[in-house]
Image 1 (cartoon, rainbow, N blue to C red):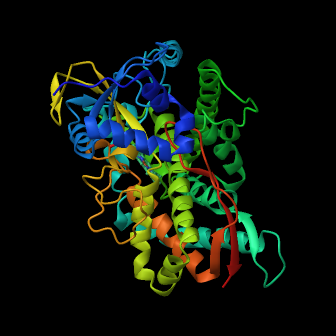
Image 2: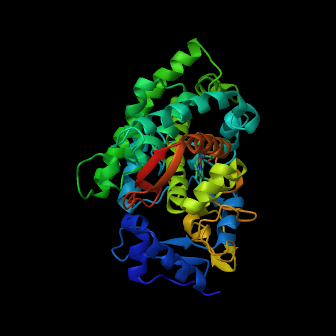
Length: 440
Ligand code: HEM
């Protein structure tokens, strides 16, 4: 198959974080590109980005994700970065004695043989069997979060309230959960929130808290570098505490873990904490807000699930597909290959676009529709293969418990204004969700 190259206008749209805030035109663009080929060559008109393959087809994203020897994470930035950004990261990591295109050394930037060794350390902890031990604590956090929602907002007792669901529920709740499993005390959570938003919200001025309307890539990198350093210092001291007094949390497992008879290096240890703190927070926030948006737009669906809680897991799974909070990861081809009929060369850089894959009509009927009863919802929002999301059972559990709690406590919900999406090519989703609700 001849490999298509995107037009300059389409390339700009794919590269622009604003496209992810606007959403529907981006889905239209993915549909158009996918209908021509599952892979499209993107060449940035200004030359500030290296060329890469945008992968929009479900089968192609699945093939690349599962072939972890053929498509590597480590050689290039795993989150889409421009040339200046990647060079800057290499410069910083070179100063630390390890030239890498990624500022943080974590599971998502490693390949075998190191990746499986590190992953094995916490794999069991994140399985449903072990998560049962923290279910009661998560339920307690959900109850406290919903208490705050019910108590907030304008309007007296018995009257409808108007709130921002993101600010009150979907942002703080997953942060509480992930901080609890990492052993971070509640008074330090605002600092962690600030740091994860600086790391992941780098392209959105409302989220990165810079106060600047438009940031240069260098400014964004500086914000991210500062956040990484702050995280490292914080978690180094947490690990020291867990070595002295181990508990049953993930922090204790990592602080006391050994690989090939050696404890984890400070960079690997900090990277592990950072990936769990960062990956476990904004992602679940986005899918939680998306589930609530779907319920607020459809009162009949809200009434149905309120009456029948067996529908909650379907709502949760469909919200994760429909929102696809992690919008892409990058891979580098280890050798020449053919991806769903399209030849790629060793060294080529590929963007596996989970949003595009999860909206592929060949896999999902009427993909833009929120359908909680979708049969065999084999979405790719958690990825696939060796790097498939470590926290996927936790994310589902957190969301199920929260919605069970919300459905007990809410009488009605509806939209009270236009929700706004984040400007980000990486982790996206709603940054505001104005709701009007009544308590049950
Ligand atoms: C709805 C919520 C979430 C979504 C959509 C999501 C999505 C993803 C995706 C797409 C990947 C990369 C998969 C791949 O490369 O094949 C990933 C990896 C990862 N996620 Fe999640 N995630 C979510 C929640 C969480 C939570 C709650 C945690 C932990 C507390 C977590 C921890 C991780 C870690 C550690 C990795 C790296 C795994 C590796 O490279 O081996 N995630 N996630």
